[in-house]
Length: 167
Image (cartoon, rainbow, N blue to C red; front, side, top):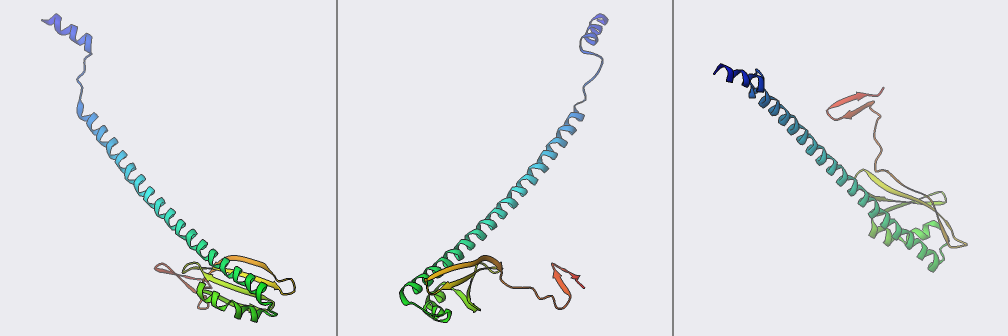
């Protein structure tokens, strides 16, 4: 019998396998992988929300851009059909179109400036000059601008729950 035991020891080695260490390592690996899975899912959700916001901003911009195109068409039609002689005359001719599209307009020197709200924070501004003799319109600038300017006269800026002193 003694001879049989020594053959076993030689064949399998003189150790006993402890399975509890392997279970602990396996549990730690599973926990770590679960944490990475949750973090990955949260990151994917944030990326999806960011993409949806960007998509909405782009749609809002192109909606305003389309409205500005209607204004430009109205100006071209007014120049071609009515032979106006002044910017005020053009403004009265296209006033109905401006009202329908939600466009604000004002005259500055020899230019007409039109603004359309893109969203609550931005608006689209187009500055045009008109050549009445050739019945042509020239776009001088076309850009998205902030809808309002901040008031920093108090020397304080409210940021989230805190305040920054800018003096």
